[in-house]
Amino acid sequence: MSKTIGIVTSGGDAPGMNAAIRAVTRVAHSNGLQVIGFERGWDGLLTNSYRKLTPRSVGGIIQLGGTILHTLRCPAFEEPGGVETGAETLHANNVDGLVVIGGDGSFRGALELSKQSGVPMMGIPATIDNDVFGTDETIGFDTAVNTAVGAIDKIRDTAISHERIFIVEVMGRKRGFLALEVGICVGAEVILIPEKPLDTCDVIKIMEENSKKGKRAGIIVAAEGIGDTSKLAWEMQRQTESEIRLSILGYAQRGGSPTARSRLLASLFAEKAVELLCEGRGNLAIGLQNGVIKSTELEKAAKTTKPLDLRLLKVAEMLAI
Ligand code: ADP
Image 1 (cartoon, rainbow, N blue to C red):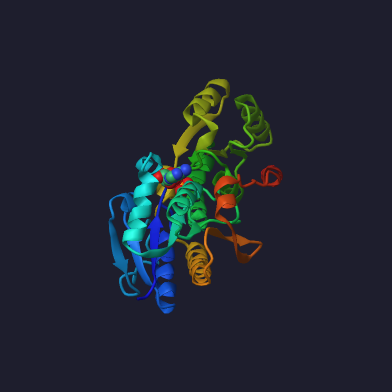
Image 2 (tube, rainbow, N blue to C red):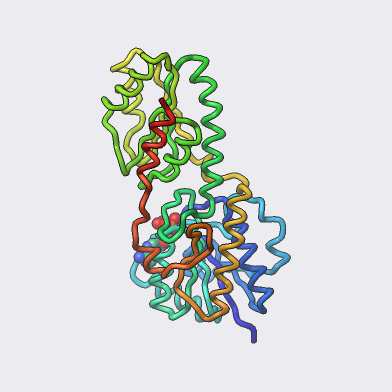
């Protein structure tokens, strides 16, 4: 009987998850493996809800955002008995290895599930936040950066025409990877991230100095994790002569067709994950490290905080004079 691998997409969706599902399925079939896809993240393991995936059934999805398997945050999986039920589901379906496509939270779930079941896990990092240790880039990050940059370029037209200052809130509840890269790409006057918060008076000072130089319009890119951006907008409006506007980009950043870059990463990460499973390896997270596809211990990827290169803030500052 041929071996079976499972796929689960978990946590927040990211563009390119479907490209990863497609590639895992096709590489696995090329290696003589059967594939099943669990539905709705870890919930599929609690309810034994899955579908068989074949090279044909994953056709036509490489260009689709989101995940055809659906995903959710599943607190029940963390509760007593959750992981035990998941392990029973894996055994009942003779799953020999599980590919987990998601962020570090999903990787922590996978670690617990592996301890309980003994089934080897492979983590494929997919999140628009890019906050997974062991990879320079996660699947979906490039798409989200491009989506936000496209939106902010349009906002800048209005900022310039009306000589207004726009605070644009981008996603990133805990980390500033997205805000930092987007900020550089749109030429933001100020970038606000949770790793290096600025006081409102410092932001005002920068914008007032810009105004004296003749730069009366401006873009402030703020990660949602810095706090209440509407309060910041209100304070700035109260304390300055400038017209301040706030634009929250929101969920538009999470969806959409994955960029070529996100599809490529998804395809290459998936190929590596299946290759390692076929070699009998397990509990690894795949990642891009200095241009090479490599693996890190899943435990390390799940539990280590990924460093953010704060020198990029200095670069952004220099480019915004
Ligand atoms: P992401 O994978 O995008 O970081 P979350 O942090 O929401 O998303 O994690 C996804 C899911 O992983 C959680 O809803 C939960 O079901 C599961 N999970 C996270 N940590 C654990 C854990 N220690 N044990 C079991 N399940 C966990």
